[in-house]
Image (cartoon, rainbow, N blue to C red):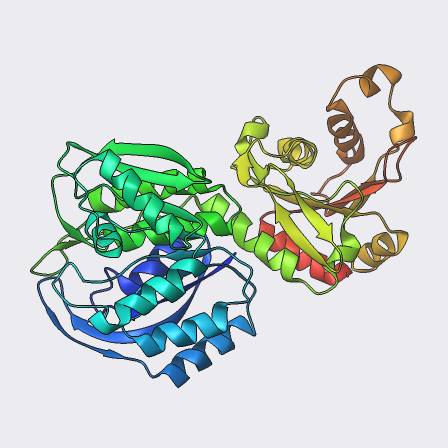
Length: 433
C-alpha cells in the first residue's frame, strides 16, 4: 500500500514528514511525502519556519499522484492560506480517505499555522477530510468550546462534524484523568477508546496517531479498528520514547510484523501489475505468507476477503489476518510439511498456456485430478485442498513452483503458484506472464 503524507519537515525526525514516514514503515505501508514547510527545531526549542512555494507544493503533488497509486492521504502542517488552497485544488477529486491532523503549534513551542489561515483551514480542509484528529486544545480552537469532560468533547465533535468532517476523533490526552480516552464520532454515533496514560511528555506522539490511523485505513480496516490501532501505536511509541537530544524524549515506533510487511508490500505490487485482472479466477484470489514451520492456518497470514477483479483493475477486499485464508493457506501448510522453505502462495486463473510457459521456464510443475477424490472426502469441508496437494507432491524431490488441477463438476480449475517468500512468488509470476 502507498500512503501519502503532506506535512512540514522536522529536522529532529520526531514529527512532521520524517515522523510520518517512520510510522508508515513500521506499519508495513510505503510512505510518500509532499513537504509544505521547512522548520528549524530540535527536542528543546523551535527556532524558525518557512513555507514551500505553492508552485513547488503543486509540482510535488502532481509528481506523486501521477506515478503512484495512493491508498490514503494524511494532511499535517499546512502553514498558510496559499498552501491550503493548492492542496485543496490538487486533492479535491481524489477518491481515497484523507486524514486531517490539525497542526497548529509544535510541542517545542512553534506556530505551525498562521492565524490568517485558520478560517481557510476550517472552510476548505475540514470538509475534505474523511476523518479529523484534533487533540483537546486543537478541538477547542476549532469549535470555541471549552472541553473539560466527555460531554464537552461530544459537543465539540458534533460541531466539527457540522463543519463538514465526515468523522471526528478527539484525542483525550489533555483531559485531567489517569487514562487517555479518545472519543470517536462515526456516522453520528460515539465510541470511546481508553488507554493507560503515560506520565511523560514526548515529541511526535500525535503525529504517530494520525499516521497510524492513515496507514490502517489504507489497508482497508474500518474507522473503529483504525482508531484502536492508532491509539495502541501511539501509546507504544510514547512508552518506547528515547532521549535522543537534550530536550523532550522522541516517540519511537516499533517495527511491524515482518511477515505482514512483506506480504502487504507484495499485494500492493500484485494489484499494480498491468493486466493482472486477467489472472483473477471467478472465485477471486488470495495471497498468503506463513510463519516458519506453520502448524495450522492460524500460522498463515492471508486476506480475510480476496483480491477482486473490478473491471480493468484489481482491488483489495478485506484485511490481512492470520487464519484469514483457508484454501490457499491449507495448500501452503501441506507443501511446507515436506518442503519447509516454501511459505508463500497465490492462486490464479487456470490457463493451459500458463502451464506450458512454466514448463518452458523449467518450473517444477505438478497437478492432481479432483475427479479422483473419494466421495467421503468431497463431503468434508476444506479437505479437498489438503488431499490434492498431498497427492501432487508425493513423488516430488524438490519444492513445487506450480500445482494445478483442471476442475470437477461445479469446481473451477485453478493454478497455485508457490515460493519461499511473497517476493519470490512475484518473481515467478513475472516469468510466466
